[in-house]
Image (cartoon, rainbow, N blue to C red):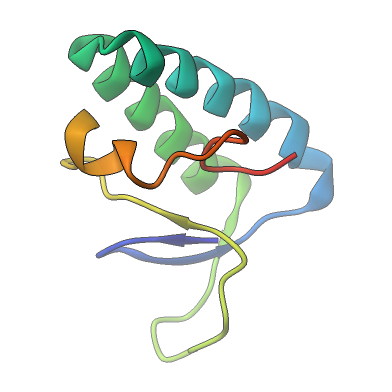
Length: 90
């Protein structure tokens, strides 16, 4: 999983349910157009990826199954990335 402008993280499958829960909150905020809830939800999702994931060395360039926006990305910018399944499919 990649966080734009930050780096890549390896995420164990065991953590995907928690990340999907956070993604659902983020999707709900995006659907309602709530910028503040969106910013809070994005921050929570990124914090969870950082806490649960294992950072890959900066020199490692591997394909990322998922790419998340950075913390400063606004709702309007992310709206185009959100599909029916959110940022994290599943």
